[in-house]
Amino acid sequence: MTIETRQDALRRLWLGIFFMCVATTAFPIMNGMVQMLSRTYPSEQIIWARTAGHLAVVLLLVVPRYGFEVLATRRPAAQISRSLLLLGSTTLFFFAVKNVPLAKAASISFMTPFFVTLLAVPMLGERIDAKRLAAVLVGFCGVLVVIRPGSEVFQPASVLIVGSAFCYAVYQVFTRKVAGIDRPETSVMYSALVGTVVMSCVVPFVWTTPHNLTDVALFLALGLLGAGGHWCVAKAMTYGQASVISPFQYWQMIGSVAVGYVVSGMFPDAFTWVGAGIIVACGMTLAVAESRRR
Image 1 (tube, helix red, strand yellow):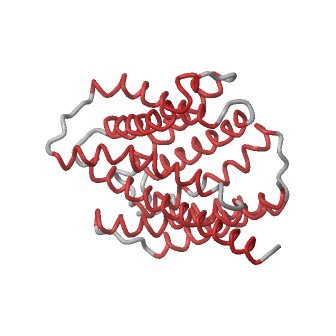
Image 2 (cartoon, rainbow, N blue to C red):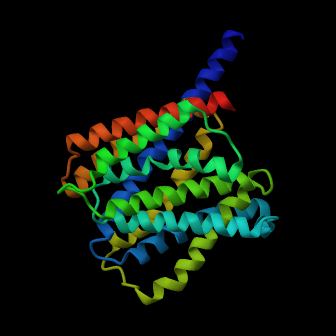
Image 3 (tube, rainbow, N blue to C red):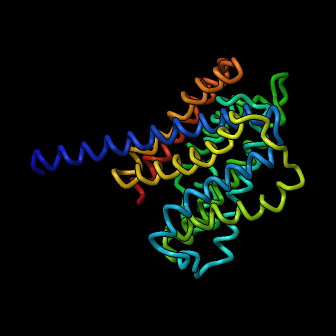
């Protein structure tokens, strides 16, 4: 490998890391906005704004290039199922984040890779070795440290975050199943469209007119930040190996701490930091093991 080739590879790697860090900065800011809006507006309306805004961005980017033929799919049931799972994940998270500190919510949501590893066995026929299984089990122990069920500080809403992580994991497994059948743009379109259609049927019954322009701006920003964050994640993965870039998703923990402190003045306790450390370490172990396996 020549010096120029090495420099180009290094530049691409840093670009991938940059895009991942941008994404994991956007998501905590979006979640902070959700927490702020939840004080005044119903969660259903906030979820609708998130999905509808995401759909608007996708329509502007995808339809001019591919037309509405992008909706053609050979696996309609799978596409609708995965889109409903994504909506379920978003719904559970948005309902929970009203009562759960952002740093704790982010820590618990890091369970997704563990669920994906376990679900890939029955749903994709993959095998799981002892090292990966151990990482999953220790990671779940880290989640228990964060949640502390049975203690005075246990928040029932934390269980909703666990459910959100599980739904997102099944969504990822379904995404793998359709990846070689439908084009990526089709999957992106369905992810935004199905959620918007469902929530558009719900939101008229709970609609609360925004009280001021600031709230309108926050509602509009939800879709932009969500769509932009997911685009940055996809972009990041095109610049380098997932085993190198994926661990930088844990930057979201730092962003969640900062945004949570600004929004609510709350700072994570020692148990949250310890549990998050365990979860992150196990998640990185899984990422490296997955890369070597592939």
